[in-house]
Image (cartoon, rainbow, N blue to C red):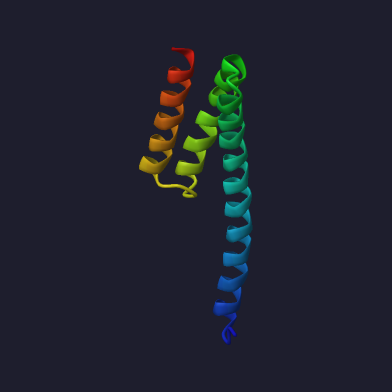
Length: 88
């Protein structure tokens, strides 16, 4: 357990930051899941719309430190690749 006032404050800050990051991560995963569900259903229009919404959400997660920049780019790239394969 934290003894000093600064350690107690740090614990509160960590808890607050963890809650924010958890919310952002959950939101990002929801957007990605919507794209994957549309791809699985074979609905090209819905997949395209979901992808357009998911892409900025993934990049926002990267800028906020929830994901690494390269991880977000890789996820966007792979989703785009699957979307392109669906239309072909």
